[in-house]
Amino acid sequence: MSELAFQVNLTPADAYQKVRDEQDADLVHEEFHDLGEGRCLGTLIFERYYFRTKNRAALVVLVDNLQGVTEVRAIATGSSEGLFFNIDWGASENFVRSVERILRDFIR
Picture 1 (tube, one colour):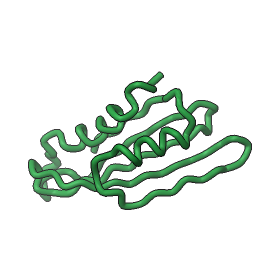
Picture 2: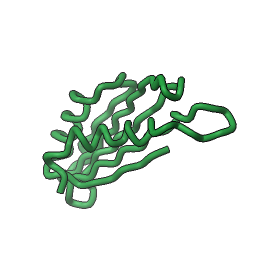
Picture 3: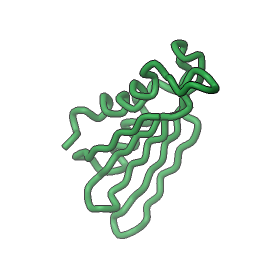
Picture 4: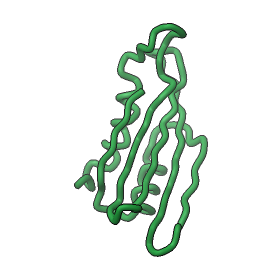
């Protein structure tokens, strides 16, 4: 499992849409909520097959501005190769870093 969190200079809706449109993986689930008073929360869940681990990995991307600034969190899981050993050969790190690459021009 790998995690990454950062802030961006975009609205939650813009960051959400950019990741949604540019992520090179299967979009499994998405939801975006306007919570009122200018606060928003978006969730994207992607899935991708990694040949190096012979397994599918899941990527959860959370975008919100609940603390007054747009925060993005990416969590990759399910990418380990075996039942007993949690070795994913860098697949989960690669998956979370893909979100960072998509938003790199907007990271604070």
